[in-house]
Image (cartoon, rainbow over all chains, first blue to last red; front, side, top):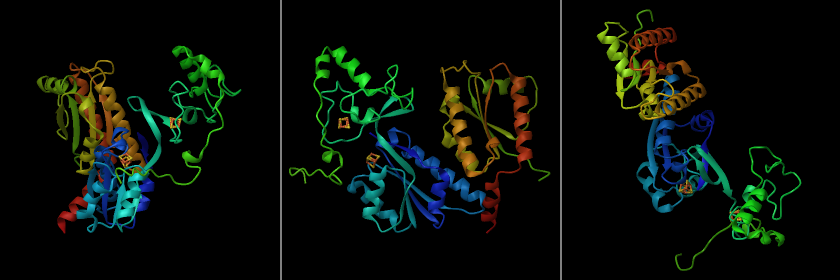
Length: 220
Length: 144
Ligand code: SF4
Ligand code: SF4
């Protein structure tokens, strides 16, 4: 899923300072799971914004709504009944959601979260990066461990000389992805695979050729 | 300000603080009537939004009273509550509010005296902090 974290509250306050009526929009998918912008976080942020205004002797009008999926036009259409009554929208979805709203309505839209990475949950409250969407997945030859996202240098043939006691040279908290790949290949009994060099990767599908798009003729 | 009687909301766990409050009562140990108790099945049930809403609605102080650490009836609800209180305190700090308006307390069911003592101390602390700033706006808007 896409992970995100709430922005510093003062940054959000700064964005909405000129406006009196705010539509605060959460998303029921990724950002709900990573506890950054679901219904609960919408409630908390609204409450924090109310406390901020009240402390300054003012009130602020906030309509809270959480859409099923903010990156789908069908769901963003649901905002039609509220949008004319507000001065600005604050979105708690990832950047995809913010842009879907911005592309649909003529009302200023501000992000309330910083979108971080495509990751997986390691345990309660901990998410780690797992994929960079390179467009040509290598997991089939690396034992299911991604060198693009998990090697700090995205090396296709590793490890580099910086690996130390199985950890990456950027810090002891980061596993060396190539150590993990090696261990996994051994575990699967296919360590011979390690001898085959991976050729230089074509980074065009990874975004090197500009913004990417998928068109499914059968669906479009 | 001199006659300021704070309104305090205390989320009390059924298995410890609530029973402690009960015990304070049966032992005739008095504690300030400012403290309004909300009984919860476990402090792990108290979410950040409950604390924020209490402040938003004008409570001058809010505390969560759970079992002693390591003694939670549901294993670690009190530790979850502690983390949520810390989160709300961080929110308050970022907003320029006094973080002391929200607090986590721990006690066992037998600590009636301690319940009364902490209730008194918290009430005193909030008296020094003064009223929740939200109240003035609410009163002003009511007057309009
Ligand atoms: S807008 Fe789409 S991609 Fe973003 S968090 Fe919501 S469901 Fe996930
Ligand atoms: S190889 Fe590419 S597509 Fe596969 S997990 Fe890594 S970044 Fe994602």
